[in-house]
Figure 1 (cartoon, rainbow, N blue to C red):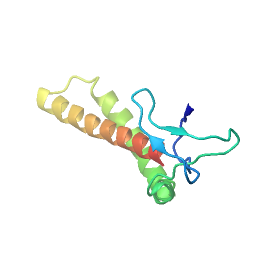
Figure 2: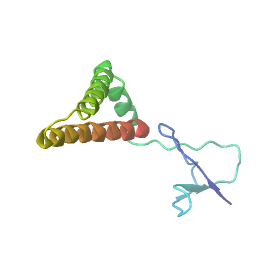
Figure 3: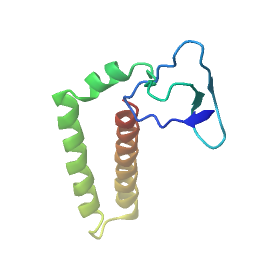
Figure 4: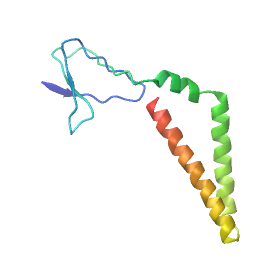
Length: 110
């Protein structure tokens, strides 16, 4: 039979020899196996390297600085500013927001 497998970030999927993996439209991965007690893992490329890189204190301090900058930009946008200045603040806030989204995706992957 076929069994669906959910693989969390950082998890591994090892398929016993003689078994096959196939993509299914309903699930991201599906695999067939006979024994019900075997574990499967999938090693995603470079997860350990990425995890070590983003767990450095410098990255955490940079993220904290971005949070503070985002708060400051949000506060400044409540003031009566020229349209040009408001546009620049919105652009900076969007850039920081994209950085947060990228960081989230990288942490999820690792």
